[in-house]
Image (cartoon, rainbow, N blue to C red; front, side, top):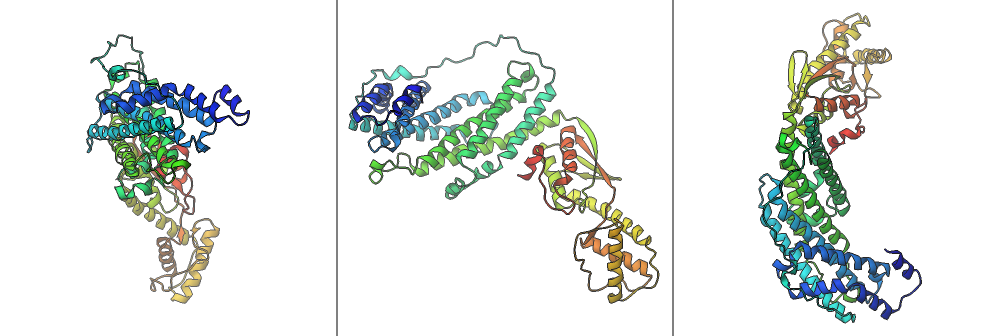
Length: 521
């Protein structure tokens, strides 16, 4: 709001005629554009960036003026205010769609299952129809309010985009950059992290039409879309800072492809944010004058289709194919290294640590192997990592046997009743000596002994090992494993190990460092 507008508004009520004259004076250019679109409502006339840019600018200025005088809450002006907001939003989103349409040839987009060009053209038809309808309603309402509309007198060709083919020669000297690998891997990793943060949106991209409304109550909200839009904009800016004007793009031809996909996702997110804004804020909000006498300006089903079938669907598709591109780029610049970390302290490689490690490896798309003694495991497969528990549990059983042996238990095997007492005392002794970790309190022992012949020490050893298998106790073993693969992946594995593999000593879920939050999504 300008200082002048603020000063007028703070003075008290404004007279109806005085306000009408103010709007007539300030909105003259907007109303001339409205008249132009109403008279020449053909698609080839309306879908012009010079026209849309001017329409958006004028609507934005008039919306600000109307809001300064609280026109949205005035029965005479609330419908005019709603139409102004619609012109601002739909000229903006149509401009974005035209930008996408004109830029697609330069984006070097990878093939997807949908015909993106055709889908973009169809949505442009929808937004064009909304703009023409809004302009005609605005013209009617303006005359009802007594606002003079002065035709601008421009011919149809005034706003036509006549673009000669070709480009200007690139004769600026390129900056020299030494850190090609660092730049490429940094951008690829940043995209993969954003892709992981987009899981909710990507899930919505697979929704059926009868599920659209439900998704708009959850993951597909204006707030979440705007946040993601900002982050992709930041990534595009990072690319331009690191790559534009340098020799790097010529040294790795996948970089311009990555830039195109970052851009198309960013602009699609802008369209999604605008569509979601209208759905949340304006679709069901009818000005008081027309609350029961007029259909909504925008058809609900058509708006949902534009948001979900077009914007969200193609965001999901282009993120998915770019993930593979980024993973391939990382593989080319892989720095093979090795890291040694302790095995997960709580029950070894059970579900949580194995799943987190494999998800981490798959996130980067690199091949990583885990080595333990002479065994090699595929770190990208939870089932492979589960196999390592055979060695871990064998080591724990040996440690338990050594601990029981140190108690010097003598005598023959006992019956079930007697052995339960001895077994309980033995476990408590081992806990006191910090040889055993007790997970169950109070400790409940099995009803029947599995061994009734031989020496007492053998019987107790078998029974204690049974408690280990049942998960009632555990044994700390100083075991380590080695991971071999791309250094970037290993850095995250090391951080995960330092964070207890996402759990405390009792197996409870704990927060991961910010760098690893993508593993929780």
